[in-house]
Image 1 (cartoon, one colour):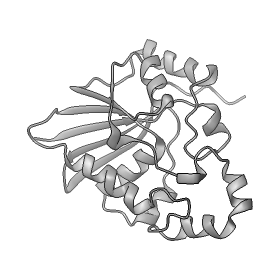
Image 2 (cartoon, rainbow, N blue to C red):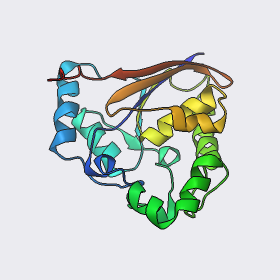
Image 3 (cartoon, one colour):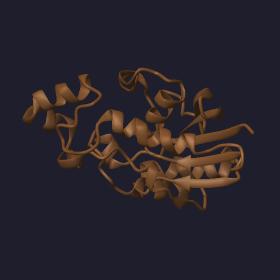
Length: 197
């Protein structure tokens, strides 16, 4: 049986705006407003199973979207060790060699957390566990790094392709198929973007 996995990226919060590593901050009004608008518009996909990453940002987004989700530990954000909560600009200034290694070598974990390879493997194991006998449609509210890792795994991309994938807030990335054969539909916004003025 084909499985359809729809991964929703959480709404904007201060940690994302400030480019912090795994900054688990709650949603502020700039994130809550579009999430509530998406819920009111009826654009949230329907599913047989609802999941979310354990972060406050994922929980707050799921609640604002009107979803009753359970936290899935396998869908937690990228474990960034001692860099957690720090701004990318601060870490780049303090540990330029560490950041360079982290960006160039998928096996590197200068922060003491997960390497890119470990993140992709963890998310890949979860994705591959969804097969024939389980739910046909799964919706998960998960951090952008988890979505990027899922795409890398599903399409058997080289790990460094992770850095070339952008995931905007409140978009749906859809994978359909089964372990070893997935199709991708990228970044559908849950709400219409406001016109640029």
